[in-house]
Image (cartoon, rainbow, N blue to C red; front, top):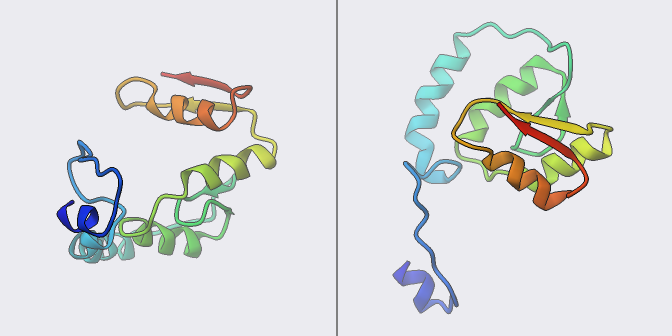
Length: 119
């Protein structure tokens, strides 16, 4: 935060998160995750899987496998992912688990018209 402020950042905010997920600081954990994923069998999905590494739909199990590993240190492309889903005809989003409806709220910021529900 000090370096950012010294470099001219107008605002620096501490995020209340449990780790530096989706950043290069997760590389050691990514190596462990890769070992676990490499020992798991994957099949092609029955529907496209949108992965936040690039926000595009994926149906190739090998690419899904690689993206799962990459996601731990890659930036989250949330807006691009939701926009691609909308462009591909997805009109309803259901958030499962977690606490509250955080993702539903983020989706509605992108498109106020879309149907969302949290269960």
